Amino acid sequence: MLAKTFGSAVHGVSATIITIEVAVAQGLHFHLVGLPDSAVKESEQRVESSLKYFGYRMPRQKVVVNLAPADIRKEGSSYDLPIGLCVLQASEQIAPERKLEDYVIMGELSLDGHLRPIKGVLPIAIEARKRGFKGFVLPAENAPEAAIVNNLDVIGVETMQDAVEYFEGKKAIEPLVTDTRELFANTQNAYDADFAHVQGQENIKRAMEIAAAGGHNVIMIGPPGAGKTMLAKRLPSILPPLTLHEALETTKIHSVAGKLGSRATLIATRPFRSPHHTISDAALVGGGSFPQPGEISLSHNGVLFLDELPEFKRTALEVMRQPLEERKVSISRAKWAVEFPANFMLIASMNPCPCGYYNHPEKECVCGPGVVQRYLNKISGPLLDRIDLHVEVTPVSFDQMTANRPSESSDAIRERVIRARQIQTERFESQPGIYSNAMMPSQMVKEICAISDAGLALLKTAMERLGLSARAYDRILKVSRTIADLAGSESIEIEHLAEAIQYRSLDRENWAG
Image 1 (cartoon, rainbow, N blue to C red):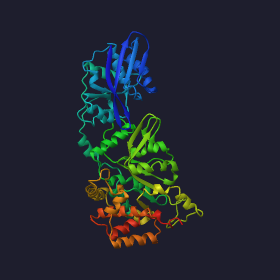
Image 2: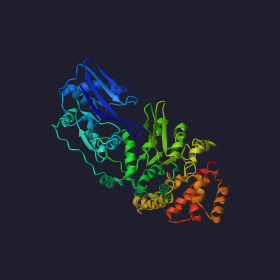
Image 3: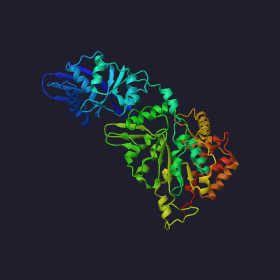
Image 4: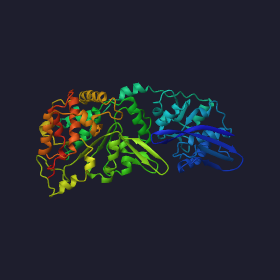
C-alpha cells in the first residue's frame, strides 16, 4: 500500500512544499530517502514509540519513506507527524475519511505521541495557501501563528491520536480563525517604554526624532550612566507604525529563527535587538552550516542597538557594512545561497574613552596620551561613514532628574515623524527601493538637497573651522533635508543646516586631540 501527504522545507524566509510518500511492501527494514539530515533519520524511533503508545504498530515489513524532491536537503524533526500518519494509512491501520493529500502536515513527536512546536510555521502556511491546500495540520502551540494566514484551515492538534481521529472523522476540530487586521490594529502601538518618562536630555530626544524621521543611523557618545541605553530603547516607540505587509515580513523572519515562542501571533511592533558585544560574526549577520537569520535580520523593520560599540570584534562590525548599504544579507554555500532582508536602523553607543570620562563636565579622564584616539580607531572609517548622526550625551543634573515638568510623549513625537515620512514617501514615489532621506545615493543628494548661496557659505565655513572631513558633506545635507521635512519646509534653510552640522562630532579633527 502507498500513502501520500505533504510537508514543507524552509530555506531563507521562503518555504518549499515537500511530498511525503510511504510504501509498505514485502521485506524488512525501515528506509528513509530523499536527502534527510540526522534529525529526520531519527524520526523512525520517535514515530515507532508514538505508534505503540496509542496501540498501533510499526509494520514489520519493508517501509520506504520518500521525501521529494530528493535534491533538496530536509532538516529537523518536523516530519515526524506526516510520516507517522502515512505509515498508519499505508499499513491499513487507519482508513481516513479526509484525504491526507489535501493537507500540509508538520509536527515533531515526543515518545508518548504529544506534539512539540516547530520553527518556520508562518512561511509554510503562506506557501500552503498559495498552493491551494485545504488545510494545515500542526502542533496546537503553533496554531495561532499559522492562523495569521486567511483562507486556510489551521488545525491545531495536541497529540498524534488527535490527528488520527481528525482524519478518520471521529473528532471534530474547529479551524483556528484570527482576525489579523483587528489583532494588528490593537497591538501595533503597544510599547512599554515612552519618551514621556525621560527627564531632561532634550537635545538627544531631538536627535532621535530626526533619526526616526529620516531613517538615519545614530551613534551616541557619552560617559557611563548618561542615559544612552535608556534613550535607544525608546526609539521604536517614535518610529512610524508597521504596515501589515511589514508586520508579516518581520514575523516570518522571527518564525524561521524560532524566536516567536509558543502561542505567538503577529509581531505588530517594531523589533528592538540588542546583542552583547561578544557576539560572533555569523550570529550578527546570519549564517551557520544551515543558514539562519542573524541579529541584523531579526531587527528588520526595527532597530539594532549596539551598546559599547568599540568592544565589538572588528570583524563582526566590518561584515555589517554591506547589509547597511544594500538592506539585505546574502549567505552563500557550495550548493545553495539564501537571502535574508536586513532593513534596520543602526543605533550605537560608546564611551568617549576606556575610563568613560573624556570631555566630562565634572570628572577627570585618567586615560594616558593617545589612548582616546586609539579607542576611537577601533571603529573603522567606512563603518562610521554609514552613520549620519553623532550625538554627544551629557549626564542629567540632579535638578533636571527630580523636576516634575511633564515630558513630551512618544505619541506626540511619532505624529511629527509620520508627517515627515509621508513627505519622503511622495518625494521618492518614482524611485524604487528608496523610502527615506537616509537611503538617498550621492547623485540624488545634489538634486534634492539643494541649498542657497548663504547656506553653502555656512557649510564651507563650518567644514573649515571645525575640521570636518569630506565624508561629512553628504551626511549633513541628508540630515538637514530631514530637519526641513520635520519643519514642513520645501527648501533647506540656514537654521536646518546649522542644526545638522552639530551632529558630526566624531568628524571634527580635534575631537580626540
